[in-house]
Length: 171
Image (cartoon, rainbow, N blue to C red; front, side, top):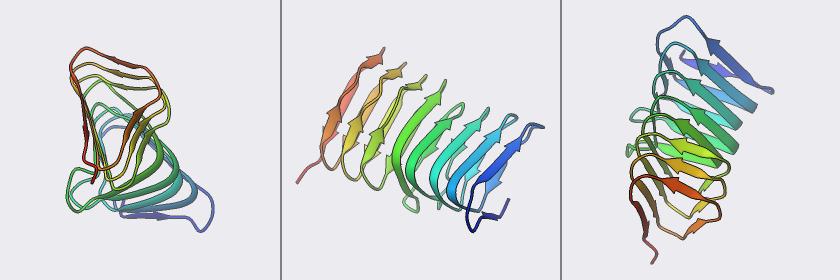
């Protein structure tokens, strides 16, 4: 899909037949819902929305140049999740909930807020160009890394089987 744009309203795309979904630009004034019951989702273009829900049986990524701007809550669920990991990415959520039986690696260009109960089945790496705040219980199998240029604040329970490392890079 190269472009999905609404003047006002939402985008709701559901695929059940199988195969991967790759997106260019997605713009929705209220919400964007993307469900792929048969593969991965790649958000390789610009995604702008008030809220976002992505569910994939495969992986979730944003390629080398994906730009995600979600003013409110982003809820993502996939076999593994990698967002904001490339220099060309611009990734910003108002709040975030994630669920994965695999690894979760999310880098935000603003403060990162885990807004609700979240799970990572093979390690968690959250990086923020601002603060990291955990407001929901987070359960991780494997190691957990929180890295921020601001403060790291944990207001909820962390459950895990590996080590937990916190790196504040304040000036």
